[in-house]
Image (cartoon, rainbow, N blue to C red; front, side, top):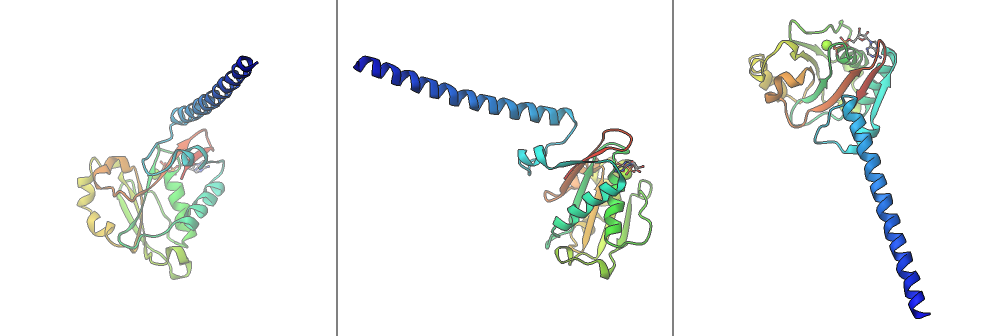
Length: 206
Ligand SMILES: Nc1ncnc2c1ncn2[C@@H]1O[C@H](COP(=O)(O)OP(=O)(O)O)[C@@H](O)[C@H]1O
Ligand SMILES: [Mg+2]
């Protein structure tokens, strides 16, 4: 009797251990599959955001209007830096929607002049109108749009007064193709990734 009791106790303990291990491995496997799918989908992995952020914080927009809503959400949650410029790095292939996103941000800030892609001039600077000030972005005075597509290294950006620009907390800087000027990007740059899924669908990872 004593023997049987021990035997069944051992059997249950073994079953429980196996069950827990099974659940653990199932969970780990599911996470691994999700992560791999994300990698296959072309999303980038930075070192400042948790894995959950990448699993759940991306959106797919089907129209420019929807992209504008994402821009609105982004700006509503953005906090400007007090010690240096607020830098936003936009990654993604040509046509994935980086410039469109910046244009929508400019619109939300009430910037009247047309924000065209600065591919040839590299950089454009717009004053942010007083009326569009929001409490979270109160300190910002200038909206800067940089397209580093044609640049080969960070050195080229340094020649365009980058140090002065990046050290001024009044600047909100959007930079396309940050990969081309990695050496001058600050640690605090916020990353947004774009991917074109088809003619009108764009995946945005904030
Ligand atoms: N959902 C969408 N969001 C953003 N742009 C879209 C969307 N659907 C289609 N587009 C189009 O995709 C193109 C994106 O171009 P652009 O913003 O210049 O890309 P990039 O700056 O990444 O090269 C634009 O012509 C835009 O009208
Ligand atoms: Mg562009």
